[in-house]
Image (tube, rainbow, N blue to C red):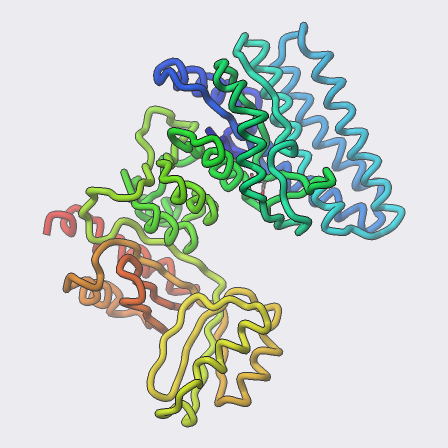
Length: 454
Ligand code: ASP
């Protein structure tokens, strides 16, 4: 059971999480392993603190650290009975002293390495799990705090460390399995790990979902639950389309497409470990724990044409036009080679006899890439674009989907379309500006009651 930052945003939310865990484990008779994020906003605040220190602004860094400390201590005061409070406060005091020393070091050096940033940004999860463990114990739950750094061995790629799955599985069996057999609730951190030398690492922003699914796979969990603040994966972003509804079930592949194309409810890497062990993943809402949420499984009996619409803004399209492409072999290989050398991944691609259009979202190496592409043909770059992905079923086998998409978007300018690359994804490129309207139109085409009935 993984709970995100908004699920542990304040004392009352910690209590909600506890009640959910207790209720679910009582009803199911299953032993929970709980993975927590940092309290909402804390990872960002820790990173800001580190940046102030890097800019040698010690007083601002110290003031921000005090704010972070106050927020945690307020939760402790509201949550933890007096009898257990001192012990928890002295444990937290050690963490805050360490943080303060680290920040001083960074201030003196005026230098913030990725390794130092991990040492700081990992603290939010350590604090939230210590508080939750103390609360669970105060409520007489059989809770055991496990430092994720003892099981989540990673490489030294600070900021985006890669976990060692074999070691995670072996350590989970030795450190956790026996405790769970005794009925103990394991409480541990998402997002963080450690190198073989014990140096703290992080798995990348939003990485707690990924931790949860890795640990779930390592202990062969019956189910991986991602508890968040919405009722599951939605047919579209509900802030934009208020009529959006939760999707009851999706396949792992559909969920992966949606997560990649901007359905922020799940970190895109989360699904991989679940697929490998075929463990169902359920997305649930801490604010509405009785709602069914979304179930991710290998196969579903869902027959809706489109299951959801996702959108990724801030994309860039590159158009390469070259007569040299006409009837030539190896041209595309040359184009892809350039992107590969600059480690820039391509999202969408469409080709005609004399042109290639593709999109990227990492612009770090764009000037160099553009320069090299110019050797191959005429190059045009368009910024501020959005990819809209319609994820659904049987696009290649059944007729009518493209017609409905184009009909719905008749007045909008579609810059690129990728249809047929995948049987479950149609992607369109429009301007950022047109994207919101396009999503609304597509949603009403595929999900309004009239459309569902027809
Ligand atoms: N706290 C981390 C972050 O904000 C990890 C997570 O919550 O998933 O990125």
